[in-house]
Image (cartoon, rainbow, N blue to C red; front, side):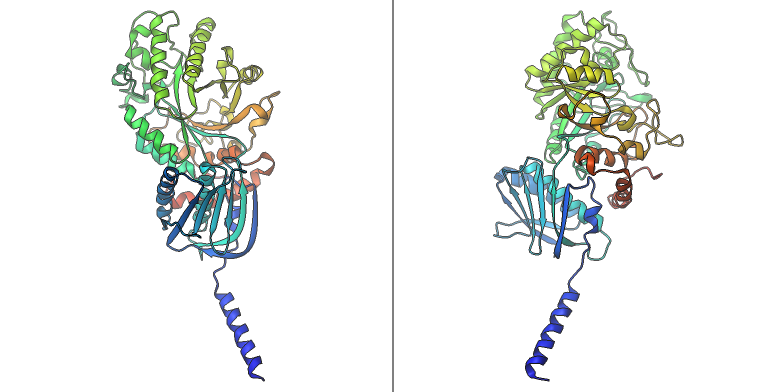
Length: 503
């Protein structure tokens, strides 16, 4: 055998040995993503993430990149990676803004030399990062968990409004609890947090001009335990925390019903001028603001002005549901005032589907929760729509008859039922072009602890998050349930509690 032939065989053997020693990754985690991505193209090769990752930005302002790296740096560190900003030509992880892409659209490219995330805006880049982060979490505990299969993932949301509502009025939850929930939801591309801040049982946001709303109206909650409230400083901090994770906070002041806490705090808001007792039950429909008093409108004016000043996001929710003791005339008068006031503050008013009886138009968002008739009426008046039906999206409904907490007035809500529906197929005659999104809601009549929140919210909220993000034609119940098995293990690793009676 010639020296040349021996050399060739030796080189071939060395190359084969090197190839065999390269870490492998089949990319199966990409198929388990939730919400599912629009397109996934697997390629040859891998990229291995080291414990320290260099990161670069193109098209970001200095302020945006600094905020961005702080948030994703904390998230990466929780997964065992340190992120280091580097102005090198090629970083391990590069983010760039591409004007030809829609703001929340992103392209995640994993190559053998590094990872590139291109997006139309910083929000899209952040959602691309959540996809990458989720892949790493799904691979955690497997061989070569830090090795990523080369691939190109292209993705964008089905709806612009992808929301979760937390009722902090029936039971109050401190800012740290809400921040924890934000951190859990951001992994699933939720971009809106709706906070129900006032109800019969409590007023939970400080209003400087009306201090007794919280000093008195915030004292209790359902069951008679101590309540609580957000100071304006706490609320501002919470809003900023959410915003850094590309989540807008939508504050809700429910009117003209669901107002007992306000009426008890300021008896002049009652038509009879008598303050009712603070309420700690769960019945609804017995309270109303007085439409005949000028002070009612002064009150609403002050509340919405202070709330708008604290809310950088585009929406303020005015409630409007279950005003059973308010006459039709008074209801319309009060709702129309609130709609006009919110608009005058440069915000888009949102209300429950009953507001269709008022002066809703194309500047208004109607939230469908119960009445198809009201939703059709709002649609015909030009209003935009949020589709959040109680029978599919109210996470305070029990899973089944054995569920220890929750309600059942809208029926049991199984994991399947929370997923197997589409926002554009529930209300006859309503086209998809006026639907801005959907929302998963957790009312807290029976929810008193963080464990209660997690038990009722997870895993059903994952399915509704996918409905909000992924195209209808790509989704299927069978695929969702297969992927959900991987995500329950992910929730375990993140120490997020959930209902364990998976069907």
